[in-house]
Structure formats: structure tokens, C-alpha cells
Length: 615
Image (cartoon, rainbow, N blue to C red; front, top):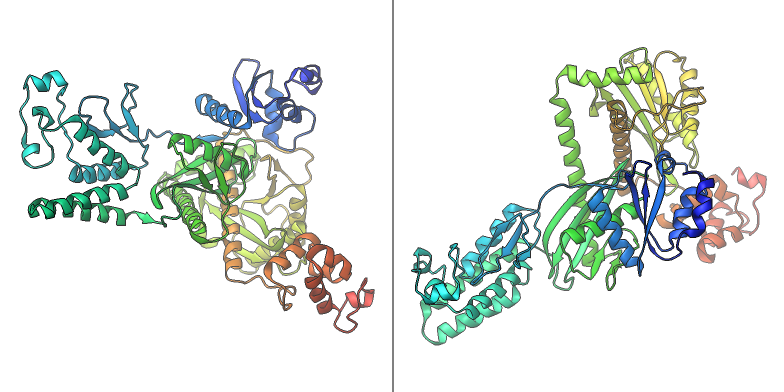
């Protein structure tokens, strides 16, 4: 569908909230989205040029559009999640989670059995869960069986069968693990009370169960039934021991859902902690593949909806690291700055970091386990796709990183025989560039890297990837020319958004097939340089390594310094500002401190002269 074709139907699109579905000419569902105003949202796809290659590809393939009007944003949100889960359109976020989770079922029958299952049957039975760990489910069942006498047999204990005396008690009765409902020794009402305690345990609500047992223990003691009191006391100890094994956050936190996210390239990782009555009851981490360069807010919003639905969460508070639009009624979104909730968020972040690192480690082990021939297959494919003169056995990739427009650093990763060679990784503090200048920074680090290899007579790579567009590639090539290395290795640029590959001097880019092994290797190299660069940057910040002239001013902290650098890009430019300019940005008190620091002789306000600016 072209923009002109869309204009002919745009007036027919409803203004109400709802969901929209894009179909190809063959009738394939390409994309599902939600909107406060359907007309406004859908029009945005056709009335502007998209920088993102995948979005352009989506629009090119749209043949017709269908709408569903709903009553509210919440309804649109829920319907969108349901349709994505059901149809998994090729341009929507792909959540890579095909596991069938275990449940504990309370069977719909006389004297219901309680057991583990992965199959949900709509027969009136009650399913509690899901749980992410079979081991945890079995542990829970052991706790229940030790503390709550329930039957484990498969007998049909209908009132008629029990009345006819068809069954006899088994060993479980004599061991005290069952109260003998098969012989009518236990009423259904008493059995249901036990089931209620089971539900409390499964929901992490142990207080009423413990209180019931304490009451029973006291009654047995008052009636001189000390053996029975001792049995109940051991049950109390068992439940307390089980509770202490869980991570206790604090009863004040109550029931909350906690989510954290890490994004790297086309993938994001989201961790979910389910907290019940101040105790972490479950945790799950999932991988999501981004299809249209969705930002963290969009990815996290989708993951929150999916996981809360999958785990049937009823928590009325969601703790997240960034603000998201989550339209479910009566649910509060919290971005904590401190306290127990902040600790929970940090714990979730530890889990998602561990998951990502473990996934990367397994991927490396998998690649290392391949034969040399299998590894080189990809390299031969890459050589053919990029028309390289030599097989790229040695690949290097550069990337710049900064924090909110300040504190620039760069990173270089090395792949040999298609495998990351971590001992050869290098990071760089930018030395010759003031402020944030990606082009100049790239020129500096490329020059430093290869002048060092030349001086040490180390082998040069066959392929160098510059993570950035034509500008960064051009800057890198300036250093390559200065070092007289033209022709010694192939240097290409990788556009950040569209995964286009640029060669120096070429007007047009190369787009490798999206699922080709060559592009997968290039993505892996790019994702690794992002990971390495960001990790180095965080380490430098956490150690307080980033110090600048602004932070040295008494009364000016890191936040104010970062704010100034983000706005004005360099200390040199800040020196040229008038005090009035500074007041507009950071307020009168701090502006006075900064201005006085750079103009100690005069202390006067107003623009700085040329002579002063060079001091």
C-alpha cells in the first residue's frame, strides 16, 4: 500500500481506541498494534519517511488493514497481547519462550487430589501456578504432604461408593498421612479445610496455616495429648524452615511484580520476580527479539503484559526500572529510588544480567564445540557476501560509548576463527577529543589501535567493522590512510539502525539477507562490542574514574556536571557561557559557583571575552 493509496482510505479509519492488523497481499498477518486513536497511529506509518529499514519493509508489504474498536486503552492493551501470543506476526516482538509450565492441580472430584501437572483440562479443577521450576513444585508438594493429610490414591470416593463400604484404608492412613475418607473416617468439610491450608501455602500465605497449627498444639497440650502436640510442633518447625529458605523482602512490600530489562542489539532480556506477602515466590527470565527497533519502554510493556498473563498475577503494584504506560485498571507503576523496592529491583537486575551472561557463555561453548570446517563455513560465506580478498579469520570491531552525552570511551573486540578472543579485547579512554564527538573519537582509537599493532609487529585483521554509519567510517579511514594501511585490510561501516554495510567511497550500501549466517556473525560481533563497551563504561563510572573540571567545583555534583555536559557538550563551551545562561540550566546558586570558578579574577557576570576563554 502506497502513501497515496492510504490517503484515499485514511478518512475511513476510526478515531477511537483499538487494535489494528496489517496484512500482506497473500493474507499473512504481518503486525498487530494498539492505539489510543487508530487513525492517528496508523497514519504515522504512511505520512513520514522511516529511518528504520525493517519499518520501511513492513510498510512496503502492507496490502490491507483491519481494525477492532474497543472501549478503552486497557482493552486495547489486553487484546493486542492476546493476538500477538496467538498469531505471532513476523514484525511483532518475538518472545522466545516455548516452555509448558508446571501447575499444581486441585482435582474437581470428591475429596480432591492435589498433584503436579503440565496439562490444563477444563473439567472444573482448580489450577495453581504456573511455576518456573519443577523442583520447586515437588518441594512444595512435600511440604504440603508432611503438614496436611490428603489422600494420594486414585479411588472414586463418591458418596455412594463410600457409603457402600467398597474401600479399606491403606498404609498411608496408618502412617498418619491420610485421615481415611475412603472408609468415611473424614468428612468432606474437614477435608476442604485442609485444602484451604494447601491454597494458603501455595500462595505463600503461611501465617494462617501457622496460626491454625499453634492453636491445635495448644489444644492438644491442654488436653494432655502431648504426643499429638509434638507432631503439630514439628509441622510448625517444618513450615518455618520452608519459609526461611525463601527470600524474605519484608512484609511491608506485600504482593508486587518486579521487572528489569537489558537490551543488546536486536534482543532484550526481561526478568520477572513474583513477590507474595513479602517473599520471592518465583522468578523467570525471557528473551525477546525486537523486529522494528522497539525501545526499552515498548519491549518492557509487552513483556510485563505477557508474563503477568502467563503467571496469572493479581498483584496491584508493578516495580520497573523506567516509566511505562500500563493501562490495566487499579495497577500502580513504581520506579523506586530507594528502600526495599529498590533492593528488589536491583535483585531482578542481577538475575537478568546473570541470565544474559550465561546465555552468551553457552553460545560460545556451542561454537567452540563445532569443528574447524563448520566454523569456517560461516567465514567463507562472509567472504563471498562481502567479496573479501582474504578469508576473515581475524575480525575486529570498534564502537563508541558515552553516558547521557558525556564521558566518552571506546571499545574494540576481536574475533578469531569466528570465536571471540577476549584476551585481545581493548578499551580506550578518549584522550585528544573534547566533549562528545563520535567521528573524532573513532579516528583517535583506530589510529591508536593500528599504530600499536604496527609498532609491535602484530598481525593485522582481515576485516574491520566500524559500528556506525558513513561518518564514523570516513573518520576511521582517515587514520587508516595516515598509517598507510589502505589495502592491508578491509574496513566497513555498520549502520546502527538498519544493519546496512557500507564500504569506503561507495554510495550504496549492502543489505545481507536478514537470516543469513554472515549477518548473524556480524550481529554477534556488534552485540559483543556493545556489551564490552557498556560494561567498561559502567565500571569506570562505579569507580568514580570519570572526573572533570566541573565535578572539581565545590558544591557541584556528578548530576549537575552531567546535565551541563549533556546540554553544552564540553567544558570549553561551558566556559564561554554567561551566568544568565547557566542560571537557565542549573539555577542561580549553582550557576554562581560554576561562573565564579571559571572567572575568579573578575567575578563579573555576562559574556566571557576571547582572552578569558583561553585561560
